[in-house]
Length: 233
Image (cartoon, rainbow, N blue to C red; front, side, top):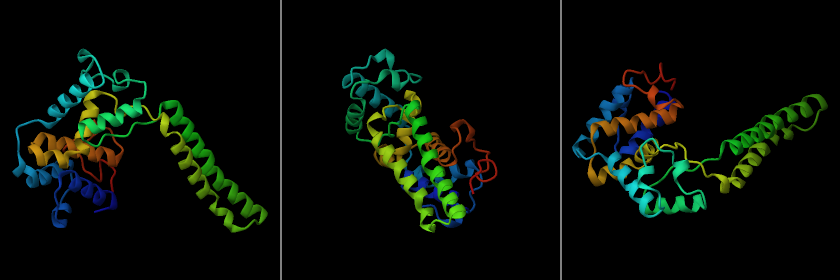
């Protein structure tokens, strides 16, 4: 079992509040195997209540009564970037997190700022590396200059922190995708309150695999091999 798969197992254990023995983890080959193993450990907390639906209604209630969003605007396919208030969005988003009493995904940078930060990172990190190689190899400068890329990393992190006030974009942006992500991030807490069901277990595992592998959610299907098909070592 490679490091990616080990880390995935750890993330799944944390999400469901369970421990998967090594002998069972080593037998997990496909996404379906993961579904089956985890379900065996959590089915004692079985519930027919759908937490994703409960969470959606809880989110909708908060949007309507606290943030004055029109009920008809809150559809599963609606974009939170369009319906959530723009003014003081970060402050209001923290208020939403407190009201829901759940961990919410971080807001991200608008595309323009995200591209600018990426460009700055390319200039600062690889640029510093190239500069240090040229100075040391061609002009016999001290090898301490190899630390310049570290300064580039620090500079990029500093710029990223400066841009925190403009992180105002929901990602994912649709109400449905956002609800599913919030559910996956808070599942261990939620199943202690109301139990779980097999469909939700599989959905949460798929989210965790997609996040770790960098693939789209629709690419995570039960027959896929975690290593051969999804590229995780």
